[in-house]
Image 1 (cartoon, helix red, strand yellow):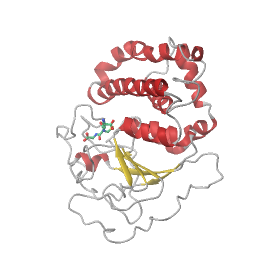
Image 2 (cartoon, rainbow, N blue to C red):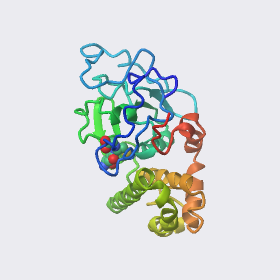
Image 3 (cartoon, rainbow, N blue to C red):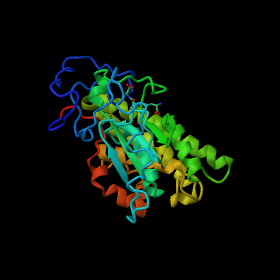
Image 4 (cartoon, protein in one colour):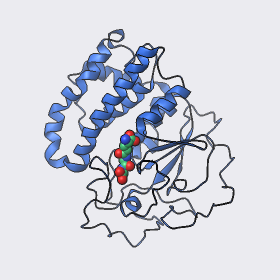
Length: 306
Ligand SMILES: N[C@@H](CCC(=O)N[C@@H](CS)C(=O)NCC(=O)O)C(=O)O
């Protein structure tokens, strides 16, 4: 990672030749053996929390605690994000007001939260975890309930599991539908998106070169259920469930954007979904977010080469 004052500086080849040490076959990091591309450097004066280190903040008030998010109350049409690089928060007791997303430098499973928060005009903080340090076993993962990311913090409330986080944000921002049936369909879409995401992650991290062509050929079949559901809701001209936006729209949009990066023609045979993506991306706050450098630079795949 060029120019980074990483705690791992000088240890960039530690992973060479290693089998992936990441837990779980479906890990987006599985199979990666080289340093993380596009990683941002740690905050000035801050380094990632490494196993066995004493937190410099233990017992003291974090300099950030109680501070207003720099983005809160901004006039900008985009609520946006601020980045805390080098996983400043992951293993600190420090708590920021508002939302904090702890994740690798990656769109991945955190992107639905970012789309939702942008569209809802909510600021958040990015707490970026070094995938390379993670792979090298440098983190004490005890604070991570399931040993994985993403984590969402809302002040001092911490939550894991992507769909639980989406539901939580949905409840807070009235994005869960208007009745029990809509809520159930929203959950159904979210689970359906997760099923496709697992297949997509396997392709990216386990079988990209050999598997890409077949995966892309089969993609319309994988996405067809969403086209079909959309067609039954307001003839496909609105949201995926019900008459108003829900958290399912953000997770579906994120999945579709990832797949459009993989194959820009993948929605050609799914005209309702194609128009849906355009509609969602034209929402002013989403359009503004998609134009940010933060979004554009954030990779769809952890790249450990830099
Ligand atoms: N069911 C979990 C899956 C989380 C997951 O697979 N996280 C990946 C990153 S997307 C991870 O932490 N990989 C590292 C590891 O498993 O060690 C969720 O939905 O949040």
